[in-house]
Length: 172
Image (cartoon, rainbow, N blue to C red; front, side, top):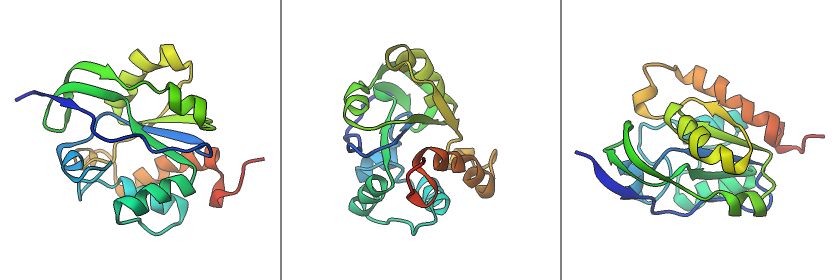
């Protein structure tokens, strides 16, 4: 059963953020926990930690700090939509988030979208405003596990290193 969901948490970024990663909309488990990628089977935090060669941040505060320390901004394409559970394919009546504050305040060099739905929504609704093409990353949700192995996800996400620098060293 579809229901109207409104995004309930703020974007994470600061003036040093170099990349912006956009999901579609927080899952029911993420909304319940009050933070991004909170489903225990979602591999986002493990993949990002492995790509950066860091330990996985466990608490919300540690995850927020982890993102900022690694120059990563995080938010979602949608501000609200009608959705059935966590099924991105069921999305109707999408209303997009305004990305202008992040793009004005942060040093964003690249925008990444996670999953096909986030990518298509970004291209349709955000790209005309931002004029910045997004770079596709596969979804790390449990539903995507049958399409990508863990090793494949890590390999795909390594592209972020080109934008934030290997070992967090500035790209020259």
